[in-house]
Image 1: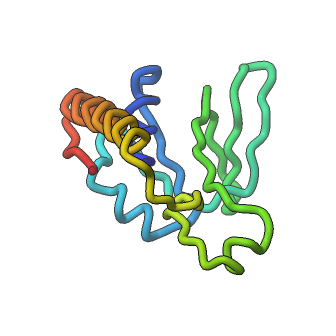
Image 2: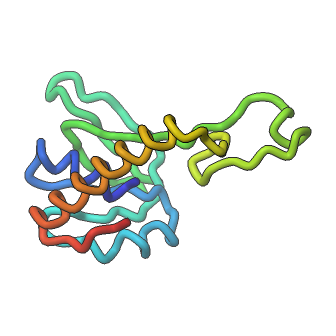
Length: 134
């Protein structure tokens, strides 16, 4: 998902930084796409601060350094509220959504959406000389 979001963001920027907030495993997984267009920043973020004069965001790192960004994209992990997930033994997806077996029609809609995402991912990977990350 991070690579797909980065490739989408690259449509609006000369360079894209993928912040992993100290997640070394994620940084290692993203390292194959690092080049002049895509950068991987593994340092932990202390906070984000608005820079109203420049219409930007300052990313402050735990080590005291900072970087200015014009825009940020974030896809938070979701979480189900309440104890019913564990009480009912419900399986969650890696992103924290409830995993469900769908009937045929919603499955076909989902497959069509997935095909569109895959086509978009392939085109963007080719555009930025990246290997597709499926």
